[in-house]
Image (tube, rainbow, N blue to C red; front, side, top):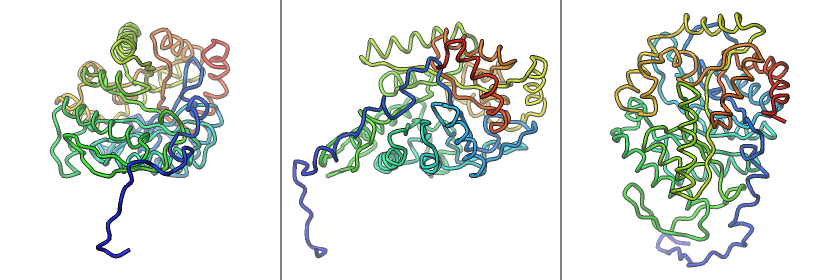
Length: 390
C-alpha cells in the first residue's frame, strides 16, 4: 500500500462473534463476584510505606520481589482482590510517603501472570491516560489473568500530581463530568463491534475500534472511592463496588443503604459497598493497641499534614469528614477504618462492618507479608466460624 492509498472501513464487522463478544460471564472468572459474605483484599502493596505514614518497624518494602510474594500469599489464602494506589508524586515529610510507587497497569499485568485466582485491579487517574490506551491495557490484563481484572477509576484529586502532566486541575464536579465521558468511551471500546465515532466535550475520534474485547462479560469489574455528592452519583451509575470509610458503624449503615437505594431506584442496577483500613491483629488486645500506637507515635506528621492540606483545600470532598477530626487515621491507614485487637476482636469488627452494609474490606497491614501469615492462621478460621467466609 502506498502513502496515497486510503483505508476503507466497512459499516459492519466481519470478525466472528467469538472475537467480538466477551468469552465468559465474569461471575465465573472474577472472585469479586463470588458469594463470600465478607470479601477480603489488600490495598497499597505497590507503594512505599503501604497505608502507614510512619517509621514503625516493618519488613515491607516496595520492591517487585516483595510485592510479588505478598500477592502470591494473598492468592493462596483465597483473598478476592489486590488494589494498588496510583501515585505519581510522594507526599514529602520524612518518609516521602508513597513516593516510591509502581505504575498500576504494568503492576497488575505482572501479578496477573504470577497468580491464579485473586482479582487484580489497576487504579487509574482518569485524566492521565486516554480511554483508548486504558481500554487496551485493561483488556490485555484481563486476557493475561483469564478474566480477573478490575479497574479502580480515580478522578485525580491530588493537584500537585495532576499539574505534573502539564494541565490545570479541574474543579471537583467537573472532574466527575470528565470521568463520566471517559467511562462512556471505555465502555464503548470494550463492547462496540466494528468501528465507531465518538464526539464529546473532552474526547473525539473517528473510525475507532478496539480488539480483542475483554474476557469477562458484560465488562471488567469497576470500582470507585468517591464519597462526595458527585462521587456517589458516579458510583451509583457506573461501578460495581464503591469504597468508603466512615467514622462510625451507624454512619456506614446510613451511607451504604442510601447508595444502594440510589443505584437501584435511579439507575436500575446493583452496587456493592466495601471499606478499607488498617488491620492490626495480635495475640492480646494490649499488644495490638501498642502496635497501632507505635504507628501513630512514629508517624510522619509532615507527610500527613501535606495530605490533609491537599484534601482540606477542596481537592477531595471524599475526605472532608476526616480531615480535621481523624488525623491519626491518615497516619495509620490512609483515613480508613481501623480494626485493632485480638483475632476474636478483629472478626467481631468484620461482623460489624457487614452489619453496617459493608460487603468487604481491602486492608493495609503494618507488615503485609509477615502479618498475612498470622491472619491466615488465626483470623481466617474464626471468620469461617462466624459465617463471614466459607
